[in-house]
Length: 340
Image (cartoon, rainbow, N blue to C red; front, side, top):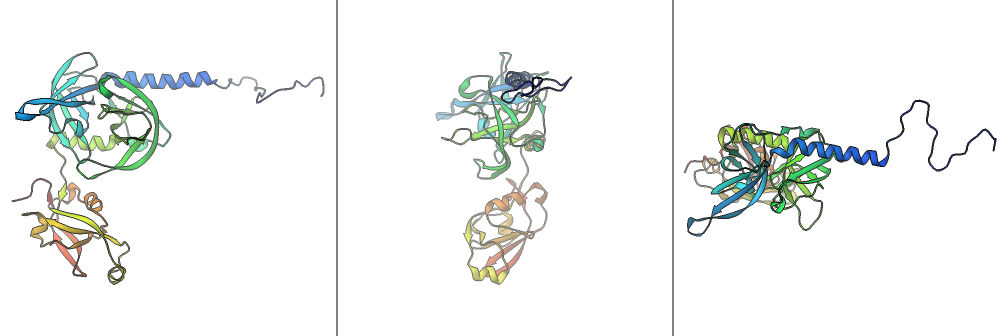
C-alpha cells in the first residue's frame, strides 16, 4: 500500500469537504420522538373520556361503559363512535383539564359507526382535521384515547393498509377503512388517529381479537361528511327499498341465457309492508341482478348504490323471476321514512 493512502474500515467513507455528517441512530430516534410528542401536544388537550349510562332494569340508569372522543369545534362538538354512545340514557365527558361535564347527543350513524355529541362549554381546544386521502402505507400515525379508563394513553405505529372494509354493527360495510398497528384496546373507541403533523386522519373504531396489531379507524374524510349531516339532520339520509335478502348462486344456463358475468345475485326473502319494493311489485323469490345498470352480486352492492342521491328518484331493478329477466321501476325512499 502506498504510504500516502490511509486505509478505511467497515462502511466508513471519507466525507466531501463541507458535507453534513449523516444523522446518527440517536438523532433519528430523537426526531421520531419529537414528532410523536408534538402531535400529542397538539391533539391531546382535545381528547375526552366519555362515560355512558344506559337504561337498566325498571328503567333505572346503569353504567354502560366508556369510550373516547375528541372536540372538533370550539363550541363543544365532540366526534366519537356510534357504538360508544348509541341508545345512551345519559352521557358524561371528562375533559383533560379535569372538568367533568354532561353531554347531549347531536346525531348518530350506526352505518359508519360515527356519532356527534355536544358538551355545554365554549372556547374548547379543537383538533385540526387532516386529509385521509393523502395517507400512505407505512406512514407514522399516533392513537390517543382512554383504554380501560386510563386517560390520555398514547400509542404509535404505522398505517398498515388502506381501503379495507369493515362491517358495522348494523350489518352495512364501511368502506375505505384505515388499518394500523398503533395499539388499540377497549376504551380507545372514538379517539383520534393522528399524523405526525398533529392532524386527525381517522377515528379509532375496532380491533380484531385475539390478533395483535390489527386495528382499524374510520377515515376522517368519511367522518367529516357524516358529521356535517349529523349536525344538520341528526342522521345521515340513505335510500332504501324495503327488502331483505341473501346471496344466491346462479346456474350456468341462466348466466348464458341473460349474458351475466357473475354467478352470484341477491334473492329477495322479505318485502316490507308499504315499502318501495312492495309498491313496485317486487316479490319474495325474485332475484335481483342489477340496479340502474350496475350489477348486484350481494346486499353489500345494493347498500353501496343506495345513497341519499337516490331518494325519490325513479330507478330500475333488473330481476330474475321464474328464470326470466324482468325490469322493475322503483322509487327508493329515505331510510326510516317509509309509509305504513
